[in-house]
Each structure stands twice: as C-alpha cells, then as structure tokens.
Length: 214
Image 1: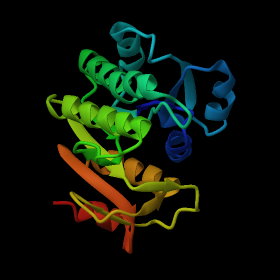
Image 2 (image 1 turned 180 degrees about the vertical axis):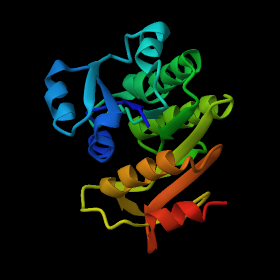
Image 3 (image 1 turned 120 degrees about the vertical axis):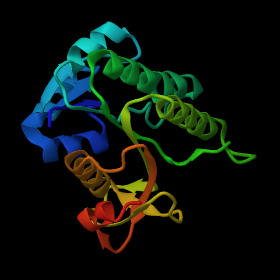
C-alpha cells in the first residue's frame, strides 16, 4: 500500500516509515531531514505544507493508496503555528487527497480533542487542542475513508505491542512505537473506517485490538 505521510520527519512518522519501508513517502519541509527519512527505507519528498497549494500536494498524492497526517507544529511553537500546521495543513492534505482520488486517510490527533479546552488551560495547549478539534471536524465531513486516531500521552519508551484501542478509553500514555504499529495495522486491515479511536497502552495485542473494534 503506497502511503504518503505528512510530517515525515516526526517521531511517529519515522517509526511508521520504518514499518512501511519502500511503500512509504515522507513529506518534509527541511532538506536536512531527507536523509533521516531515507534511512528508514522510505522515500522523501520536499513539500512545505504551510506554503504549498492543493494542486502541488495532489500531484504528490496521485497514484497513492493512502495518506497519513502526522504533522505537527511541535514543542516550542506558538499559537499561530498550531493553526497553520495542526489544522490548516491537515485540511490541505485532505483537499489534495480528494483531488488526487486517494480515499484512505488516517489523521493523528490527540486525546482531549473533540471538546473545548478546559478552563485555565495554557493558551498554547488550548490552541493545539482547538486546532486538532477543527481538523477532526473538517475530516469527518468528508466522504474519504477516514480514521482519526487520538493517542494518549506520547513516550519514547520501547513499544510493547499491547494497547487499549476503542472509541473511548481512560486517559493514559502510549509509546510512539505502538502508535506507529497501530497505524500500520489500520492501513493494512482497512480498519477503523469512519471512526474516531482513542489509544493508550493496555494488555491487548495490536492485531486483536483492531479485530475487536466495533
């Protein structure tokens, strides 16, 4: 399954590219990141989603089987970039997927999205959650075969392959290794279509968790 991954140098994206190998193409905006993506076995394409137009991105997507939105403004970014990356870039990728005829779309969101930020929340975190929520709302209105994945608190601990994956789960943490493995399985099994899924560490093997989705 040829998969285009936006935010191709992100921590989850690099892990996913290792799993998908030559079937993956990572979109990066920094030429200095190309070698890291290629070291995973994936292909790298330069594309700045904050500056690109929909036709440019659609041309990259043409002939692909799936798109994964794994981009994020990242730590240290301000309120403005939470909107231009975490919301607007996802909208752009979905627009391009529709134009290119790529129906399968997986969006990495965040636990806490889908509802207003809690009162007293730091303004940058509130902007992040708001951007993720608006990106989710945009995607759910489309006719794409979408899945939204909301991981809990992300860690760099080694993956265990054991998760809790459902429409709603208690708050918790999850290794990025396991997030990437879940996305790879969702793509492989064409599972979770039209679903918003929450993910934390648990005691169920990933393949069993996906097979047990409602």
